Length: 126
Image (cartoon, rainbow, N blue to C red; front, top):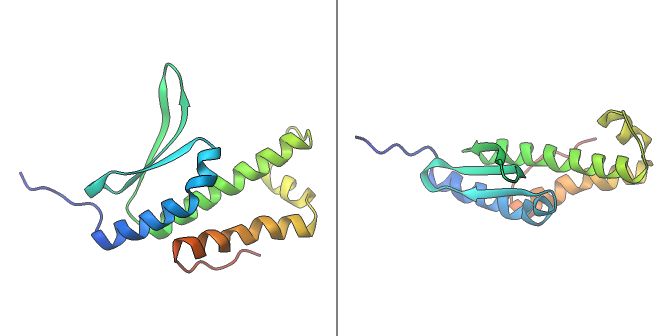
């Protein structure tokens, strides 16, 4: 049986840089990224005992991985802010719109921070 490789070494290195860039912040959200060799990277989240892991997503492309992790981090920030401000039954866009322009920009600037840490180019969000 032929051994299939799902991710190139070059892409694996890029994915590792993305994982490292997000590691600290995602740990706070109980999200773990694992390098699973020739299969790519797996994101594990929503661990509930005694059931276990509720979500596992595999990545073999660093750009897709970066964008997905950005979205996870971004939404987690909005949820945290909504909880702090006791906002209920409100969607992500409304939470973001409720923030000052400075706070909005601070959150959006974090995308560039992650991109620089990962050594990749990502367009800024406006």
